[in-house]
Image 1 (tube, one colour):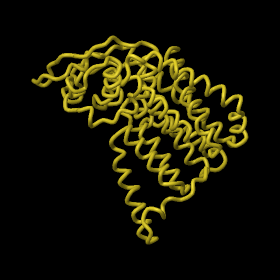
Image 2 (cartoon, rainbow, N blue to C red):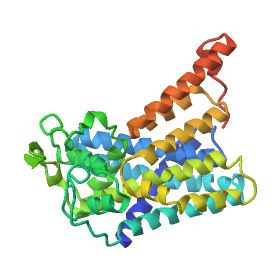
Image 3 (cartoon, helix red, strand yellow):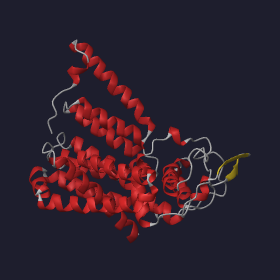
Amino acid sequence: MLADVLLATWVIIGIFAIGLALLDATGRWHGVELIGFGVGAGVIFHGAAGLAMGALPHFRVYLLVCMVAAQLAACVLIMRGGVLTRLRLEVTGPFKIALSLWPIFVFGCLAIARLPIQLPADTPDGMYIMKQPWLNVRIQRLTELPADNYIPYAVTEFLLRRTSFRNNHPILPGEEVTGRPILMSLVAVPFRAALAPPPVNRDIGKFSYVGQQWANTPSLFQDNYYRQFLVVGIVLNSLLLLGLMVMFAGLLSGFALPVATLCAMTSTFVLSQTIFLWPKSFAAFYLVLALHAALRRYKTSLIALCLVLAYYCHPFAITFVLGFGLYYLIESWRERNFLPSCALPLRP
């Protein structure tokens, strides 16, 4: 558990430090929005680092050193630049309390994921592709959800092991990687590469399931590897809680915000969607930022960026992209002036 907490702390600090340093450098972001959108920017940075490490395996060590150096430099910048001092003055007491509950929520999810969960005597096909008492399967049992929580982990392993997506597909029976955006997997790559880089494994062979032969993706499972990925995934899924804090910070008065945060973090639905590693809550984080930006009438380019990032987390975001698009088309029609009418000033 201590190793999980330390890794989660590294992920949180790295994302926060990089994001705050990047957005503070623009001089246009302040208060809770610097925190919320800064974290979103920090995620992009680490996703780009993961993409580079996956595409340039021979330079992985150098890229990893650059990433850690960037994290340390960002920590120095936000401390010496007075960013934390300004945030303490700009952010209200209730938001500080709500924000302090967020890492407690993350650590609580890590503890729940370590509960001794027994698999049922019968593990039916469809629901259970893997039937061994592995961590991902035990979490399936805990949440009563399908095997989708293995897909982001498998993509990370493919990238680290230089396994061919073309020759070893689908990623799971009936699940092509082309139908699953991989931002969570990319963010996890640098942390996995730093802690326990797996050996090169270009061809994973086949395994039999429901009377057919499939790419042997289950062979990539190792408990310590999956647990490391789980820590990163829980942090990313938990960002939904942070996004909701940012959106409601100006709408809830007094101590309603920390109370609402406490209610959300103890909801069984929120807990299950955070521990189970399909990136729906991760996608919802960017959707909430997009909604916040729309409510504050910020530039549509910022809203569009948040929507694109939500889609890169999980494909269900496309329905919200269509909804936002319809809203702006109606706005444009009402004002008799197409897209420029939606490009409102950025005012963080």
